[in-house]
Every structure is written in structure tokens, then in C-alpha cells.
Image (cartoon, rainbow, N blue to C red; front, side, top):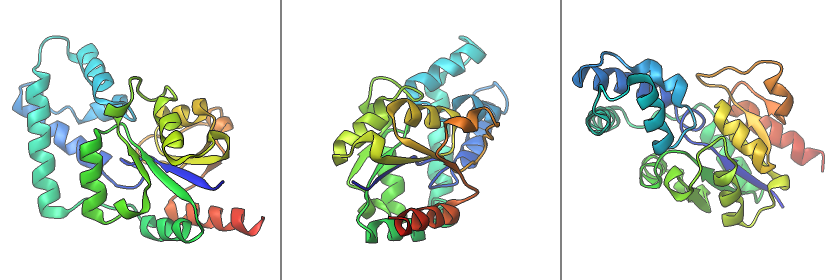
Length: 219
């Protein structure tokens, strides 16, 4: 069995930095000031957990529904003008894995409908047999649910499946589910102690392609 499960934000697309700007914009709109710093506390979490993190920071002194509206307003305008920023090496990696018969899925904490928008707008939806958004599981990363669900959806054993991730919560989720976690860092940087749970740590998706070439050559 050959299978890979991909995270989305920060891994396939350079969208976490867009969220920083979106939350700066939305925070000022609702009167709490620039709030882009909250991205580091929210990486890999689904919407329910993000709400909890924000409530822990701001209490009842802000309107989360208004925050969501202004965030979406910023994102829609940004993507309409600029498109979704694709990470270097993504297309080559997907084409390589597809050509060698790997089954692929997406396991993103973002809502499934929004994940599909990003995949379709960049033309990579065709590579994935299953797309599992954060709204399809009860427990958020770092719990293993989303990765177990993704593996089940493509008929893959977790122990034989690679997970490509950038965030601490995402990598822990993959590890907790029994997959082989491969880290491609974005905003968050791991340390030597955390790296012990990783199958590999790479600089970018071009290096991920090189890794899979080595895996294939060793068979």
C-alpha cells in the first residue's frame, strides 16, 4: 500500500500568512486591534477549537461571528485578486506521487467546503481520492481522528501511510494516528525533542519529492 495524506494550510498553500493579515484586518474592524498574532495559537485547530482559543485570549470582549465575517471578507477579496498562493514544489510532488500509484487524501482542519474551494481553484483536487475537513470529525488535531478518517476513506493502513504537515498539532495528530509524520515547516519551528517523533523533516516540497524518489528507489 502506498498512501500520503496532506495537510493544506501552510503545507500545500502559503495561506497561514494570509490569515495573519486577515486577522489583523478583522481585529481592527471589531475593535480589538491587530490580531494576526493569534495564528500561532491556532495552527492546525478546527473552527470550534479556534473559537475556544480566541475566547481564552479575549473573553467576552469581542464578537467572534463578526470576526469570522470580516476575516472571510478579507480572504475572498485577497484570493479574488491574487489567487491561492501555492507552495513551491507542490505540483511536481503531486504529479510524481500520482504517477507512481500513491493514494492521496487531504486532512485539513479548515471546513471541507473551503478546502474544496482552494483545491479546485488551484487545480489539484484531481489528485485526491478523499478530502476530510475539520467539520467532518468531532475532535480537532492533535487528536488522531482526522487522520484515521482520511486513511479509512482511501483504504490505507495508518502504519503504511505518510503524513505531510507543517504544524505541531497536525504532526501530533498524524503521529497519534500511527502515520509516518513528515514535517515541512512553515510558521512554526520544531525543536530537537519534538523531531524525535518525525519520520523526516524537510525544507520544502521539492525535498519531499526527492524523499519519495529515494523511498521508491529503495524498493
